Length: 483
Image 1 (cartoon, helix red, strand yellow):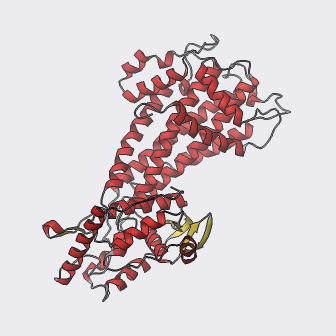
Image 2 (cartoon, rainbow, N blue to C red):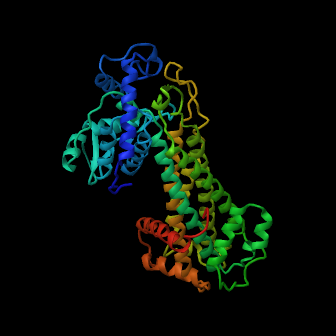
Image 3 (cartoon, rainbow, N blue to C red):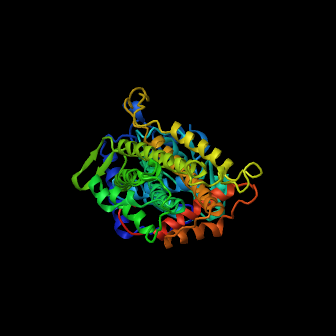
């Protein structure tokens, strides 16, 4: 979502937006109470709002500019902008066409509002972060373009964009939805789907480099397990291992980090598939309050801005990311231990003591997995009453989704670490992959990552390997559901 996206708002959507907006203003003219347009916000709903709708818009945004923390990644904010635009295009929020066009034009550039990480509860929509988004579209606050953080006004001018003018219910329509939660959650799903395929590649390469038996991925065995995604994971590993010649030096049964990999990866795939469906529903939802139904002369007040489904899914994604991380960290440890790696040197060092090879990579991997485990506490169970008890139950969906995305990013680095270690194991050992696809995978990694014959900084190698795995996952495992 960093790159410009061309968006066209067709005539059907434009007509739908105008009908809803006319109905909203007609409702106000008839004296109908409409939350946020004629009233104060939140627990102050019993008091009248500002005299004009333009003043009401400014009031809605100004009191929400209270976020704290570092800025979110521009790609995450732009994902939220796209999700919000999709919700507003469904014509139930009373937003103006100018708002939709402002979002679409901004997404057609690399414009990304500067949005602080902390503030949203995911309970009444992502109020605070989306308020920063809306203010940036007006030309207030800050925004990113070309990798620079500028004032929003400067960024708009540089990109040839006009500030968006808000009236009616525009401000509340922009902020009163869980679009940041859905956008971040969707990005986490996408990252974990790639990492699942990366985990399959890494397992296959590990098995071939060590010369293990493929008995643990026997289709009959995994079919008897009764979980389709585990059988699918085993099938994918088997495809990659076709042509493997076992070393015949391994024990009857491998450690769980090899033997149970299909069951673990399959369980993760099952949960990620479920969470993908939840995030898909969230993206296609109309998260706002109230909603307008002109065809039935109804203004419906309710709680469609309550991000509980995404909160549960964000937490589930976090847990699955950690367990995939546990698998990678244990596989890495197996490879560097001369008592379990088939006699390869400790730390895979060509001259142990004179060289230390992947010792630093393991230390960093240990720090990564420890950080992931600490962050796995569910956010969706941490409900705290706030807002004068108007929001007396809250889901913390935004924190759950952002946490899932953070852990997905760390998982990529763990997989990059394991790829570097696998490459080194093949470099210091006498055995090379015997399965043609595994040999091809190792060759691609080896073309990017040099063997460690003398100690050198490896941080960039780990990041390069992580990016390479993303590409290879799409190349070698493009078919099949869930993996």
